[in-house]
Image (cartoon, rainbow, N blue to C red):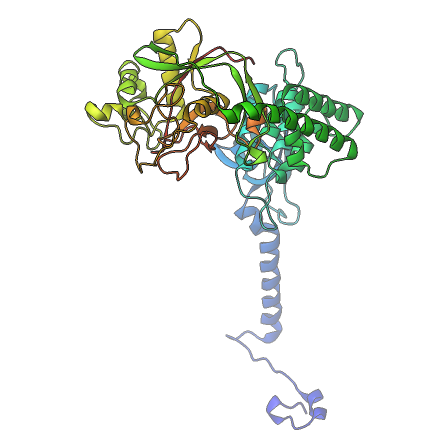
Length: 513
C-alpha cells in the first residue's frame, strides 16, 4: 500500500511514496492537470510567437551610407551614425541622412512589420544611401577642426581611446571625388594641417589618413606610398623646420629618414647660430610712427627671426622666419574708446546684439576718462576680425591691409620692442598708454592682456601654419601670468570671450597663400 511522506522511515520506503491529487471545484485531476499544462504551453507560445509582434510591430532597419559616419534621423529624431541597425515601428517613416560637407539626403520608407514569430524571425531591411558630391572644402575644414579638438584632449589610455577622426575625414574626402576639376583638393595642404595639430599619440591616425586621402579603397599600394612621399617632399621644401615635426611624431625613424633629419637639424643649427649673434646683441630699429584713423602705428623693420627665441624648448622653436617686408603694428592694444567707435558704426557687434557667452561682459554704460583707455577685453576673435575689417573699409591704408597679426609677426615685433623692458605684473589690466614704451615706440606688448592673432593654434602650428583648427593662437600673456614674455603662446577657442584677452591690429602687405 502506498505511504505518505510522513510515514517514510527508510530508503526502501521511498519507492512507496504516492501523491494523490484531490478534485478542485468539482473538477477531477484527470481534467484540470492537462488543462493547466495546455494553458502554460499556450502562454509560452503566446509570449514567444505573438507578444513580441504585438509589442513592437516593425522592422530592424540597417542604414548604411557611403561614406560612413553619417548622422541618421528617423522622423526627425537622431538615432545614431552609419552603419547603424535600429528598430523602426511599422508605417510611413522619413529617413534623413547627413554628413558635414555633403548635401542632406532623405527618403520616405514604408516600414513593414510581422505579428507572428517576430522574435524568432524578425523583419529586417537595409537602406543604402550614397551621398552626393560634397563640398570638399567644407569636408576638409570639418575634418581638421575635429582632429584638432581631439589633439587638445588627454592622451588615450586603456579606458579611453580617441576615434580615428583623421582617417574618417580622409575617407569622406576621397569617397565622392568624382571630378577634381570641379572642386580640387590640395592634399598637401590637408596633410600639412593634420600634421600641424598632431600629437604623438595620434601618429597612427595621421599615417592612416595620409595613405588614404589619395587612395580610394584604402588599400596600401605603390600609388598611395608615392603620394605620401610626394606630400612629404613638398612640405620639406616649403616649410623650414619640417624635420622637427617628423622627429616629434616618429622618434625612431628608418636610417634613411634619420640621415635626412640629421642633415636638416645640422643646417638649422648652423643658421640659428649665425642668427643668434645678431639677436643676442639686440637690434636698434629706427623709430617710425604713423597715424591712421585716430590710431598710432609703429614700424617693424624687415629682418630675420627665430620663432620662440631664445630657444628654451625645442618643440616651441625650429622656424627661421624672414620678414622680407616691414609692417606697421598698432602701438597699443585696442582700447574701449576706439572699440566704441566701431560699435557705433557696426551695432550688430554691440553686446546686446550678440549671443556669445560673456561677450563684452564688463562693457560700461558710459565710456569716459581713464575707462576709455583701458584695453577692450571679453572680445571674441570674430569681433576682433570684424573690427579690423571695419577699419580697413573705413580708412583703407594704401600700403597694406588692416588685419590681426600672425603669431610670427606679433612675436617678432614684441621681441624687438620689449627686450630689456621689464614690467611688474599689475594684477589687473591697466590703461594702454600707461605701459612703458619699448624700442619700436610701442607700449609694452606683453603682460597686459593676451592678444588674438590670425593663426590657428596647434602642436606644430608655428612650423606648418594650418588653415583650420579648433583653437586660435594667442600671444604674450596677461596680468594674470607671473612671467609674461614675447614668445609665450597659447590656444583659445575663437568664440570664447575672457577677461584676459584683447587684441591689436597691423597694417601689413598681403600674405602669400
